[in-house]
Image (tube, rainbow, N blue to C red; front, side, top):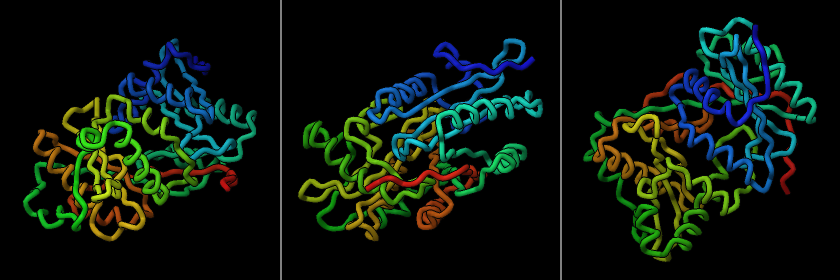
Length: 325
């Protein structure tokens, strides 16, 4: 017999085991998940989050989470994540979890829900379509095997324009002091992220939330490369994050450039420095994720030797209005 019930904090490890079994390429540790949920609880926007657990004979076999993202927040916009262990699929468990989450968002007056699945998941996408979801964007994991990366061939592309130098965030903290370095890093990220393709408009991220997100164990100040002008302004950035479930892998966060400094090769120069650094430290793979409509970044990653994986297909139900001024 299948039962669906609201999850409690004591269920978090069991739910994470299900998620990691279904999405091993994006596995997380319990520490990471707890940090993520704490960030939602402490965010001044008070985003909603609700988890459910599906059990068969007392065994956890499925999980669902309905939540709101502070970085593209709207009070009527929600995100749905759902996972069922492969050996328990086609028993109606996913449909039951979906129905439970749907009744919850209807009760809250949601006007938009975003959900998705891999293009290789034959059952998930048709299920979303039958329930009124439509495809809005595709995201590709791109994987680079560093054993085939020849850094010496990219020396010319690593050069920066006159008056701009590359430093890690760790070095910038030493040079400017911690507070000034965080402000410079934050200013660059705040502008660069505005043009990142996404399924909903970005919302403002406060400095405190920016720093809190980077207080988790996957953040490495020495893995963040910044382009800095003589005046001390950070004008481009490329982040490499640790992967705590695979110590031979790093994940690219944001590679971006402030608008006035684009088309000068800054992002490429910084990304290459990170790749060279990772290779020297014995990292075997670098993963990144790009939207299907981000043609310049996809082309750049193709040029660098990244290989695209099956796409994550993001789907939308409804559509909340953008209330930004």
